[in-house]
Image (cartoon, rainbow, N blue to C red; front, side, top):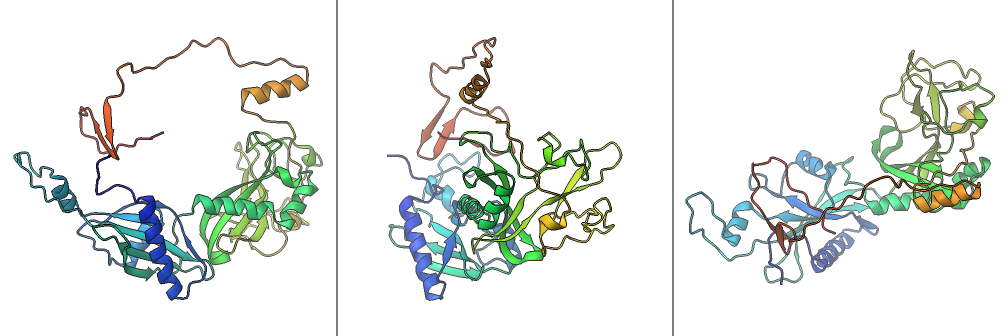
Length: 386
């Protein structure tokens, strides 16, 4: 059996027990739609007790951490339990045999109100159901990190939206070809205190094709915005995304469908595009459709009202339709359709890396023992286990 370590991640059983504890408490508080986010470890130093200031709690929440967390036991408790030496002359270190208490912390969201809570529970040393320690509501604007589940949900919201489907159909993109790359916005003052995401919309010609080869609506530096040939432009390295969808993550609904506008570049530089939506730096932009060549002269944020496509003063631009495959078998099949031969490179020499005597480290549960490092390092050791 693998050795136990106080900093082992929460087990599946502990996660279930902690979740049940928190759900029960939140139901008592009248929260009917509750969401938690992910699992990781959170260090609790002895100089910073759990009841820290709201500012520090906000920093912890907005850092790259996850919502269901295991409070790392105090360092001295871990050292005593493991029987580790505390000095170079400590040849007989004390071993307490007392397991440090394990505490789980959850970052919870009320999906109906957007309120964020931090809940903490402690597991009994003998195992079993945890006891609730505290539930603290966080200040407005404090948000846990966006989760992969939320990103996936937002893509489905955009793909199934009737208006998005209609806009895609206008440029020849069917509903089954819509692909959305969701990103976290966090907070944007024009939408209020909402857990936001933004989704960039692409066309994908096949289930295994390059994800980003066909962005919906782009502008090329090879022709100005007023060029009559702009609808026939093909994708080039200077093209940038144009369809931007802003999503309310908790409500699972679209707040705004926007577009990008081309800005006049400085002499000798590539064109710069700015969004009608989620950009922190607002360069002067075109706001008068009747004067597409005239900039507003203002750096005020774009409004979120109105119709972005109508206000942009240009017709829609269909995405280019040439397949962009990465996998060799797909490239070969596509070339064969056009009567062309294609193959991967055959002039490279084989490279073989082997360890006939095995690796130079040992794993015992989550504990790793390895050869002595030649010099101390300030960087932590990261290992990927597959």
